[in-house]
Amino acid sequence: MQWHNVDEFLAMGGYGFYVWGSFGVTFAAMALELWLLNKRRQRVTQIVKQEAI
Amino acid sequence: MPKELSTFSVLYRILARDIKVALRRQSDVMAVFFFFIIAASLFPLGSSADPKLLSAMAPSVLWVTALLSCMLSLSRMYSSDHADGTLEQMMLSNQPTVLVVLMKILAHWVLSGLPLVFVAPLIGLQFNLSSAELQLLAISLLMGTLTLSLIGSIGAALTLGVHGTGVLIAILVLPLYIPVLVFGAGAVNAVSIGMNPNGALSLLGTVLAMALVFAPLGSAAALKIALE
Amino acid sequence: MKNMETKTGINWLQINWLRYASPKTFYPLAGKLIPWCATCAVLLIVYGLYLGLFVAPTDFQQGEGYRIIFVHVPAAWFSMFLYLLMAMYAGLGLVLNARLSYMMATAIAPTGAMFTLVALVTGSLWGKPMWGAWWVWDARLTSELILLFLYIGYFSLQAAIDDKNRADKASAVLALVGAINVPIIYFSVKWWNTLHQGASVSLMNAPAMAAVMLKGMLIMAIGFWLYSIAVILVRVRCEIVERDSKTTMFRQD
Image 1 (cartoon, each protein chain N blue to C red):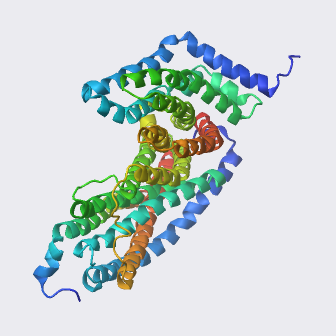
Image 2: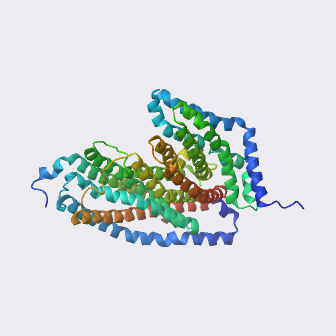
Image 3: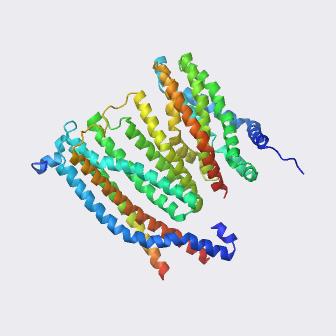
């Protein structure tokens, strides 16, 4: 373990904004992709249901 | 029975016909030429008249302008022949499509790339370039504009008959033009900073050789897809 | 679709069967794979984050700022890898005239573009403290930017062509041309960078990689890979249903 307390972990040795910014952007982009894909999947499920009838 | 024409004479006729048709519509050919001159002249007005600054940015300015001029005429490469059915006739002839495409590319180069090779050194004078730099500008444009026509023909063939072709071609083709720009302007820049330009020129030649092999193949495939 | 109408009834059935068979068998197979890939992706990414943020030691040159590599480098790898994979499926589609291959290529592109964007933004976030500027014309970042342009071209071409069949084939040709160009572009940008003496510190070669850093990066990369597979498979399934439902609608009238 590299850190002694939460503040130190969040500060990232002064690079906090850049490190957390990077991780934030990465996972935000992945979450956005998943959200958009989920919307599309729901639309598609609707089509499948309609065609099954 | 009509006499069978040899491949060579058919290809020559395609090339000659393309150039003849284009010269009949002179305004199209001249427009590219004038665009180059006018656009390049804008840069000093947008920055400053400082000769040092001008000669430093001249290779990139002239090369980027040449690249845009070549691109402007790309959308016409196949579309006018497509509109009147000539293109289908050429594709249906018993000559290999790749060679027919190569002739169309050459015609495009003669009409929109080659004139720039001659006028660019004149514009270069306005940018305070030395004679060694002007010479390399002409040589790099000679090799580079042919490569631009080759790569551009893929974009022209892919977007044949698609709406809003002009901007679309730019988006498809400009990223592919980057190596040509880098090595072409790089050769001139190398001379400016007192380095040997042969490395850049041979890399430019390599890109040209690769484009000569792959671009007609890609364009022929793209044309077949477009005309399916 | 126009071709189908002009063909005879028997031919039509034959072509239909051949074209639809593989997506039809693929659809449930993909459905079974997705949960496994998704679960493993989550576990690996969490483990990779733990290694990267808690276990990996501070870099002696770049301090804690280097920890950006745990997301930046895998994202950059997959931005390039997914482009090449997309081009491979596109080429396969052209050679075999297989619909499923085109669908795969179409499904890969958005994820590839997403990783390209992530690599650019994280690279820039790394550059600000290290180079003192948000953007430096470093060979890696510049190539990544051009890669984004290539993805944009692929999307634009697909969006511009209304006929799905032609859009598939045309964008496949573009993807292949782009893939041939990727190494040339990368080389030209590197060459240009040495000519103009660009940034000397690079994100990749700066930290003397401790074993645990490398391990964390690789685990994140495998996590991103499984994430990509899961997302791509879901997207391919959507693609299959969307296209086939359109054809059934076409058949009814």
